[in-house]
Every structure is written in C-alpha cells, then in structure tokens.
Image (cartoon, rainbow, N blue to C red; front, side, top):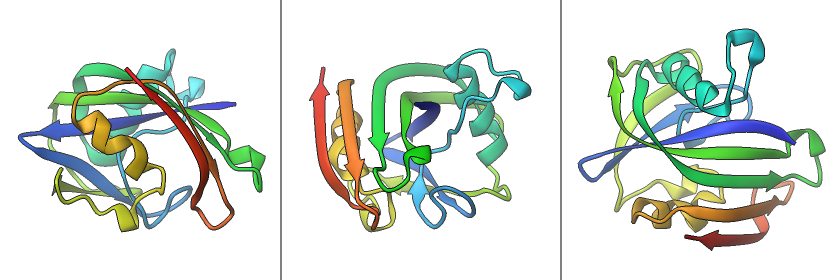
Length: 155
C-alpha cells in the first residue's frame, strides 16, 4: 500500500483546512500532507508530512504528535489504496500562504464543512479533536466517494 501523511493543524479551538485545487481530492477541504517521496529527500513518513505541509500551505510543523494510521481502500481503483499516517500539529514556523495546490482557511472545530470534505472525516476527526488517538482504522470507499464500510479503534 502507498504511504501518505495528513496533518491536523489546530490552534485556539480552530482547525486549519485547505481546499485542494488539483489532483487527488480536488475540491475538498482537507489537511495538508501527501505521499512519501524519497527523491525529494523524505527518509520517513514524518519527513513527508513536514515537507508537504510547507509546500502546500507555507508553514513548517515544529511540534508534531503521532495520532495513528488510517487505511483507505478503493475497490474500484486499487492504485488509490493507501495507509495515511495522521499527525497533530500545534506549533509551526512560517506564514500561511496559498499555493498552486491548496488554499488554507481556519474553521471553528464546532462548525466543520463535512459536506465538502472526504466522507471518512466525519467518523474520526471529531474524536481526534477531542484528544483521542487511533489504534487502527480502515475505510472502504464506493465509487461515488462515500464510505461503504469502516472500522475504527480509538485509544
């Protein structure tokens, strides 16, 4: 399975999401992150999370907490299957900026735009924002982007 990263960036009751402007997940609000890329100097999936966040929204995470792994399955397109390593970010360097790939925006954690996010987010993100970690999670997606089945074990 492909390895990818996802950062949950929070500050003072808000979460930083970014509108994906192109590629996989286009037109969805999501956290920054992406694929492990050894050619770009990534040695670990955490390296990928830090690099992708800087590339996509201009900030470099400096205090990162591991939250668990989300496994995504797309029976209609196996190339999309991936293990996504989830990180909580509460400190960073740099200034937010829009890139060719993402437009960042702060949201109140009590008013998340789930209708314009990946369908799986509604199952795990509220719990993570309450302080839970994920022991194991898996999601199977239908072709229309909806979650057909899921299983989450929180710590």
